[in-house]
Each structure stands twice: as C-alpha cells, then as structure tokens.
Amino acid sequence: MKRLGTRLFAWASVLDDQARDQALAASRLPFVHPHIALMPDAHLGKGATVGSVIPTLGAIIPAAVGVDIGCGMIAVRTPLTVADLPADRTSVREAIEAAVPTSAGSYNTQIAHVHTQERITELEAEAEKARFDPEDYAANWRLQVGTLGSGNHFIELSADELGRVWAFLHSGSRGVGNKIALHHIAVARRLATQWWIDLPDPDLAYLVERTDEFWAYIRHLRWAQRFALLNREEMMDRVLACVAGWLGVDRLDRLEEVNCHHNYTESERHFGKQVWLSRKGAIDASEGVAGLIPGSMGTASYVVTGRGNPMALRSAPHGAGRQLSRSQARKRFTADDLERAMGGIEYRHTPAFIDEIPAAYKDIDQVMADAADLVEVRHVLRQLVNVKGD
Image (cartoon, rainbow, N blue to C red):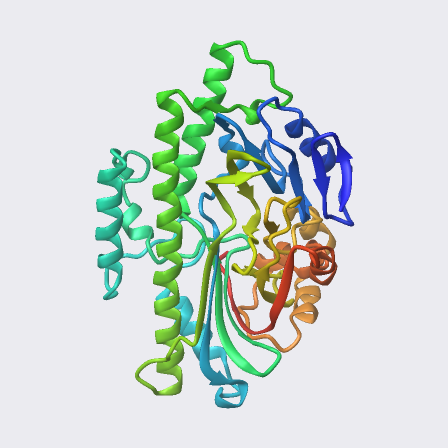
C-alpha cells in the first residue's frame, strides 16, 4: 500500500501518471470519506479511475460507478475434469457462440430459452417497484437478457489447479445499463453547470442525496445491477447446456458458484460513517466473501475470498487492467502475436481480437501479488476455451 495523497491510498505497484492525477482530483472532493482506495489494476477512466473505490457522504458521482452498471463475473465449478473433455473443442465454442449473442448491438432474435422469460418478468416487476420504464432507455432491453457484448467481455471454459472444469464469464447490463448511466452522468453535469459548481473534471459531477435526481439514479442503478446479475445467470444457463450437449449428458451439476459485480454502488459502513461506496472496477472483498478476478484473454483467472482489509475499504481488484489503449495495441501487435499468446486455447481466430491481446493488459500475476493483503486465492483457473464478441 502506498499513500499518494491526504485521501488517496494505492495498492498498484504499476500506476501511470494520468491515472494517479485523475484519482488525486477525485480524492479532493469534499464529500469523500475517509479516502479513495486505488486497486492494483487501476488505470485511466471516464471521470473516475477504473480500479477505484470511492466512499462518499450525501452524494454519488455517476461516472464513479461507470457506464456498464453492474458489470461483473460469474463462475461455476462443474463435476467435469479435463480428462472428460474431447480434445477437439471447436464444436463447443461454436455452440456457445450460437446460444449466446456476442458483439456490441447483438441481441436475441426471440425469447427462446426457458429461464429467459422468468428473468424478464422479474425485471419488469423490479422496474415497476422502481417507478420507471426501462423502455425509456432501450425499447429492446428484453432481447438483451442473455447477451454478452464485446470488448473485454468473455465466456470461458477453464481448468483449476486440480484439473476441475469451470465455466466463467464476464458481462454487465448491456445497452440498457449503458444508456441509464449516460443519462444520469448528463443529469449530474447539467446540475453542476446550473449550480455553478467548479469541478476538476465535468465527469466528476455528482448528485446530492436530498434531491429527486439522486433517488431516481439510485432506483435505476439498482435495477441495472439486478439486470446485470440476471444476465450473467442467463448466459451461464446457456453455456452449461452447451457443454452438456457437447458431452451427450442431460445436465451438469453446479458444485460451486460465484456471481459478483465490479461496477456498482452500495450503502456500507466505513470508518464510523454510513457512506455510498462506489466500486468502479473493484469487487467486494469483505472478510470471507467469495469473489472473482479474471485475467486478460489467454491468461489465468482467480477465485478468491476477501480478507476485509479496512484501508482498502474491503475491496479488491476486478482483473488485470489495461496498460495499452485499444488503438495502441492494434498498432503494436498482429494476429500472429495473438495466436502465439493464446497457445493451445480454443478461440475464434480473427484480427478483431488483437486489441484484447494479453500484452495490452497489466500482468495478472503482479496484480495478484499486489492484492495479497486484500484477498486469499482459492483457485487458479487456466483457460481451455475462450468466446468473445467482435
């Protein structure tokens, strides 16, 4: 842990100047209590640094939650071992790609899966309780349930240190969550202009707890968080069904399951105060709480339990964290470089994934070493099959 300012502590051994300066600016906001915690994977973000944990009194910064509200991971340990799997894994990858729409703007064409409608019905009821209509943000939000997205979102089959097979995926609240986030970021910016609030960055605009705008954001945020969690559950159902079909069995038991957010806000108590704790690229690492920390495409992921470190606001990193922008990665690497980096992992061979090459990210082993006082590692997962969207 390093102290970078009066109210900024960092666990990152590698931190660029832009990310540090961005986090320092946020830490000086008067309603931050007691300090911001920067995770080992911290890097520059929109308004607030990705990999930052920001506790606030009486206000919330929508950009400090991020534009993919509720983004996170789910992992399930199956009864399978690597020895149970056929050597040719192309067919299961293709089956997963057919069952789960990938890529930005790619949605279900119809509600064809048994649990999808149940989850949609739950979300409709949650929206009614939250007193808003998600169609105001995305008319097709129902078709987004059970879809992956692109960028660093992924679906994987992996093996742990004992050769046991896990299904693991990373996604969030899709287009509807993005539009909810952008709307409330814009509201906060408009109010800051209206009230002549001077900010170091317009995207640090905040909503004040006593206002209607604040509580509208909370209601919509919580709905989007629920959408993200159910979206991951829906995709996991489909993935496990694909694996079962590949092996010619009816179903696969779930021996362990973890589903956690890493872009979200909750009301928590820290250092004697009830605060709004925004984790933007960070997971809950309260003592004994299970969590997931994925690496980049082609590297290891981790199943962990939290150590409850109070100075880190009981939080931990959410992954490797980018060290090169997408454009920088595309200029520096080729499809052949990606092929070598992926080794024997089954994946769709396309230049579209060059910007996701492991070298564009921080070293996940270094991130985990930096996080040694934040989490205990329970399992290390090595990829067998990788599915991504363009």
